[in-house]
Length: 121
Image: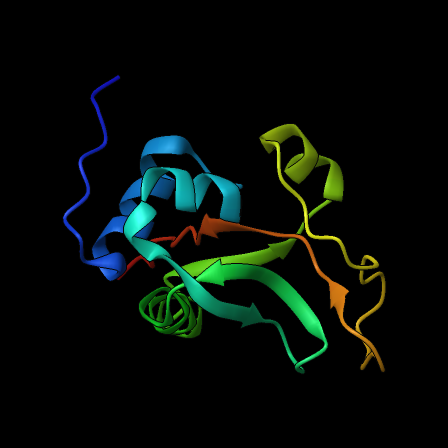
């Protein structure tokens, strides 16, 4: 397998990394391969008490929001075990329901490219 070489453009690098590593990319893997996306920001899912990850850059948050919003890739709930295998997890209660929480909860997620099917003409 060829090496992954980042371009420092997260809108290019994130989908390329998913394509290279495979669907189900965690934040741990994302920041391992794209360390320039580390920072002091939080990636929230829904409200401010449902946290996907802490320690990303504003550039990372904006790129992920745009990529997920454009349907280029999907954000999928994941088991916390996946993050434990990657060696890092957030120390918050795990969000188990799609609801608004009174206190911060962690929603483990992974990223996958969305498959597009060709429509016959």
